[in-house]
Image (tube, rainbow, N blue to C red):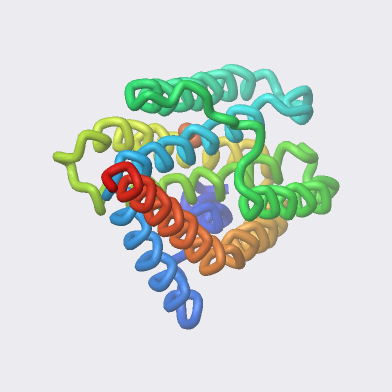
Length: 246
Ligand SMILES: [Fe+2]
Ligand SMILES: [Fe+2]
């Protein structure tokens, strides 16, 4: 198969630009999340909340990279997975250090928020449903949902960096993590192209479309939940500040 035909077979790996109603929904989600980010940066407590969310997300990715399916990996994938794991551990440590510098020494990273937990559970069910359709079994859906998660992380961090600008004190940390996540997106794409046979590429496209639909179904609810949580947090710390002054 020529390189061009191989590329066409794997065009599904790129996140598609949303169209029609999905485009409107994505624009709405983006506006709500930008407003939430601006609100979070109004207080030290809000910035700690950002760092805490970042830390929990990194620890969840780290755990996902160490789960049971790793026993099925071909030899060539083991060092790539180890390097990926080391990156995610470095990210978690960097968020933890930024929290420590702000006086936060303990963060409960036992589980992400309920909406993220539901999304992960739906992705897992999808992965197990699709595993028998690939020669490499569960590895393919795990990397496909991993790709969606890394593309989502890139979107979240790129938005955050754009809102705060490069002179903000948190910019170096967030932009460094963003550049690693962009590398992970490319890594997941390359791994999937090696794991999936050309004859399985249609199944991969169907799987990715379903994984992205699950992600999008949490879009507006997730953005509103984030805005309300941040707004409540900000209001609550404002009330505490006012109480301390009076
Ligand atoms: Fe990361
Ligand atoms: Fe990553």
